[in-house]
Structures are given as C-alpha cells and as structure tokens.
Length: 529
Image (cartoon, rainbow, N blue to C red; front, side, top):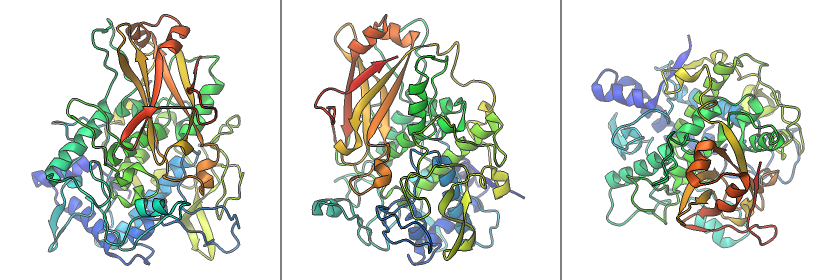
C-alpha cells in the first residue's frame, strides 16, 4: 500500500480543526529527531542536507570512482536533465530516514508545500513554517522553522573574507527573509517576520504585469507570476524542455523561426523563483511595502539552501508538479522519459566521483549519492529510470492545486497567441556574488517604465572553484513572450518597437544596478524573434 504525501496546508488545517493531530505531530517528531542525531550519523539531518551543497567534500567516497580533481563537492543537479529526478531521489532518501526516526508510523510521508494553492489574508505559508515553537513530547522547538547547525560548515573561497561572510558556525541557525543568517531586525518579533516573509512570497507567487492607464479590452495573460509559470510548465511538450532551464533555453532558441502558439517554460524556472522569494529577494507587491536590504536567507543560495527545512517541503511540491506533468503526458512508466538528441545544453556532466567530465547524461545515469542497493564500497545508485514511477517507490500524492490540469492546455491559443519572443543575453553569473534577478522593463508612451519580466537566477556566492556551475552556465539567457495584448499595452506595433522599448537591470543582494555585458562592456544583447 502506497503512503500518501499530503499538502502541508491540509495537514495544518486538520491539526487546527482537531480532525487529525497525529500526522503533523509525527512530521515534527521525524524532523526533530533527525536534527538531533549526531552529524556523523548517516540518517542525520546534517548529513542528508549536506548532499546538496555544503559541506563541500574534496575526497572521493567511492572506491573505483572517478578521480576528477576539480570536483568541488555537493551532488545537486541544476540546469541539467537530471534536475527533477535527482531531487526525487533526494526526497526519497529523507523520507526513508523520517520513517526510521518514527518507526511506529510506517505510513509517514513527506508533505508538500502547495505553492499554487489559493490563500487568504496574504499568508501563503501555513503557520507551522513561521512559528518558532511547537509543543510536543515535552519539547517546544519547531524543526520546520529553522535548523541549528550542530557542526560548522565553511567554503574554501579564494578571498578570506568570503569564507567568514558566508560560512555557518556551530550553533548558528538557518534564516529566511527578512533575516540574514543568525542576525535579526531590531525591534521586530517572529510575528512581524512572518508577515514580511508571507508578503514577499505572495508578491512573487501572484505578481502580474500592471500597466496603469493602459488596460486593453482583453486582460494581459499572466506569464510572470510563479503560479502561472508552474502551470505553464505542464504544457512543455517533452521531458528535456520541462526538466531544466538551460535545456529549455536552447530549445527556445532552436525553434525561434517557427513560433508556436504557446510559450513553454521549465519546471526549474518557478522553482528558482521560490528559492529567491524565501531567501531574501524583495518583490514589490500591495502587501509588501519595502525591501529589506540586509536579508540574506539560506534558501536564496545553493550552498546552504538544503539546511533550511522548508527546502524539502518546497521540493516535494516540485516533485508533485513533476508527477503531474508525467501523468498529463502519459510518461509514468520506467523507460518513458528520454533526453532529446538535438539538445546539447544541460545534457553533459561537469564531472563527479561517478560521472567523468563530458559524460552524456541519460535516464540511466547514476543519481549519486542515493543507493538503490549495495554500500559505499560497492554502490548501486538509483537512476532516473528507476524512479520514474512513484508508485513503484511506494508513495503517491494527496489532493493538490494542479490536479485538474492533467489534461488540455494550460496556456495557449487563443489565450496567448505569441507574436514575438525577446532573448536577453550577455549577463554572466560570474559578475555577481550569489543569486540575482534579471528584471526587464518596457518604456511606455508617457516615459514611465513597467516591469514585464523577472527571471530568478539561483547561484552560488563564488563560482571560481565550481566546475559544475561553470559548465554551460556562466552566461544566462532570459526569454520573454510577447502576445498581442502585451504589445498593445506597451504601445509596440512591430518587433523593432519592442527592441527600442526594453531596458534590463539586475537585482543582487540589496541593490538593483544597470547590467553591463561582462564580456564586452556594453549593454546586454537583446534579440527579438
């Protein structure tokens, strides 16, 4: 019998109503016990969270594995075709540990944070994620609120100041917007923090294009908000495009001469935006009055994102969207997923202990460090084919906000007849410390500007020693769809009009500055096709 992964919102509602208090209590017990295990324990939260990024490991843990000297450590797959499947295996690893931590709850499952579920009163996060305490078993700590590092982690950066600024010391805690590491805002309390965090996430989730005084007879289709992009990803026609942002970019570029009626996006795109929304990147909104420039939350960078417990609840939703896409496209059986042969970006390994550099990534590629059988001395790793069907993994999903979208187009003709697509390039991740947001605006007839696109770039603080980050990923590409309604609203009649109206800026930690092309001190390249 399959265990059911419920939405965290439903779990909290049933707890509050008294209908079911056991499920939430067991989830809290599991996370609390894993966080209390010694960091050397293979089931400890510290160990499992550390598979994603820090603490970096230079040694090769697998006898007979690759001797690739440039491997920085950290196994996470981003901007590759293994992004959805690697993280599915990651969640399975944590969920197995959760059930071992609470052995009298064999059906215990990891809940998902339903990020497309409508919410009231500007509170997209259920209360369990914003309350510092939860009384249970004589303990009032809330392991879903933050994690206290039992052991310090540090990155060996080239500049000594980097390691001190971005490392985590023993006893420090994970933080979310509007906090930074272990610091807090003077005069603020947890309730205020929760209000600010919820307001920022709400603005990212539902923020749309607003053009005052330029309303057209037909409202402008929403292609900007996180919710709309999750829904749009379900229309991706193949796994490679759906799986990651890098491959999707090449696919869009390759097909620019034959525009389809729908603008496709990848699962990784809205995934990145949620990381940055929780991690401290301000998004203007009606209930989000001012930016907090000192906010440096852990979810906003790859190094320590997985140590924030919300990471796993977020990725459970990513896996729910992945499964919803599989069901919609009839690709649920082992062997049904494949890599498009004409896509080269996001399909090669940058090198790891089990994948030599330039290895072709396939659905048979090992998803290290997740063992299907064997042990470290003789490992048999899961592959994407092994975990394609979640029913074979022993779990299924409870009711979610995207259940009704498993058939028919989400966005498409006639709602969004595409006229043009703009591509913004010439922006390098090496120009900016950490993650950033590429923001594109259009100039209106009255001289004002309106933001028409925001592209969240999830990155690391220092990329010099990260070969996986550098492989095909130094330059970023942003794609912006233009339908008839948007063109009419900004006063553009031709593709040349679009080009002349666009301006680009990049939002880094605490500031928004004009973007310069890192390759040749000119404005970023904007192409219209």
